[in-house]
Image 1 (tube, helix red, strand yellow):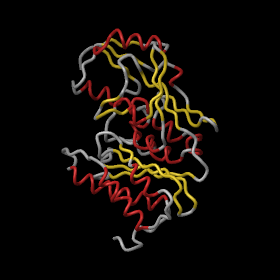
Image 2: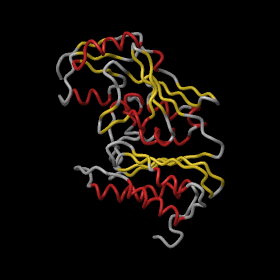
Image 3: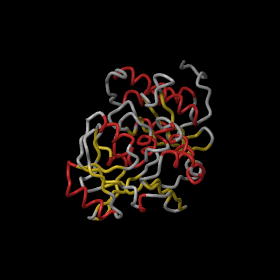
Image 4: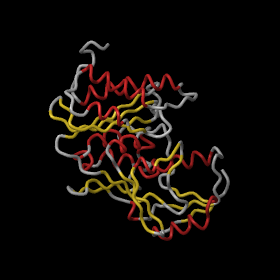
Length: 293
């Protein structure tokens, strides 16, 4: 690892100007779990690190009945998982955060840093996408708000401008009768990065689905909303056969990546299986019922 200067701004404006002035020679650092690994492997060699640790607007988790949930970008995954606010109002989000990577990463890594890294094989982006979350970006020029879909541009690429940082994540309030399930597939019990994940948020009346949002992650370059599968679910009484049909639509509508961890065909098959199990879990179905096996 090469030597670098460590800068500690105390305001968003100051941090933004440092990022703008130093350009490609610097990186912003929050928890540092991904950044330090990249630096140790010499994949990244910045001359300056701009610490966000003293930026108070990036901290805290709070909830308002009208506006919904606000998660400061410096909130650690463990903070999200253990937050009484998140567990009370968005249990699916707390459940997802409790499974991110491993205990060391959950207690050091931040949700803002996770989104900025844009690793396709991680958990928060897909779950947040299904929750219709927004990302607030800040700089010396002011703030702008993007949906998760707008923020995540491509494989390890976001819509962040060079002088911007993630300030907070906003999650709208859930309507009455809405619940969610986040599921993932790991190749082995020892692996911490999912090969496929599915987040399903649905407003329902018993087995009747009124509204649904489905996002697939980990198996695609960026999380993908499955709008055709959502439309198929809405207005239907969900059975095991319906769950299987939804899973087939999900598998047909994604463009999975192929790499050393798994082929595109394997990832498509796993997304189908995880999607079926996710629908079954949310609607309290026995996955072995019906004619589809």
